[in-house]
Image: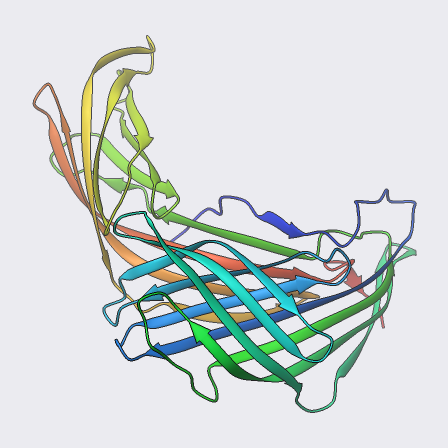
Length: 325
């Protein structure tokens, strides 16, 4: 399934963008913690936090899922603090997915202890005959002992191996000092044919809670389109929109769309590192049962595969250049 990213949002910037001729010295440490907690209620709590020493900015997120992979709670904002003594703490504001209403603030506290020796990597990248980046990146892995977790409405049961943690310390002089941490999340479906509605296709994109729908009816002569936002609470929702004649750009009717989401896989968590970039992603696949009806009597249905995703991307200064050793 080919899914288009909605675009990455910069969470932390190590330094302002530089021109190709100017060299910048990047000294920054990115700290990161990722956890999955079990609860007495059998639901699972997913948590993550990160911070940048260069800017002092930090953030955290959390969501809670049932064993049937239904999301119960999700975060709207979160803070994180990483202490020099190895301590870390976070506060995350949560809402109910079903109602959209706030349910309170979750907290996580713990201690990080270095595991093994830090790994030093020499960074020497070239672009043509000139150096694009030179310096070092030190990766330090941590064991995490969680001392406290509170989640509204849950009795969290903390285990010894619930969390992983890492520091990436950059000391690099580069002509390409881009932002070093990005976060992105979104929802996207395939473009699916609408059975029963001749020449009709539908697609969902954007946010999993409030996706944008697009319905196209194109016979090659009289193309028509309806689009808008549909709110999905508990995985279901309905919306209406004007059906537009794309040639005259006039409304010719009203279209109603209903969507029911059913999860088709467990949430897949992955971490990959390549060419100086670390990507941590969580992806979940769905089947979207979609019904479309138009006030002139036409209608159609589709069973449309979709995917929800979140990504954290750590880009080392000057990453992406050709290495020369």
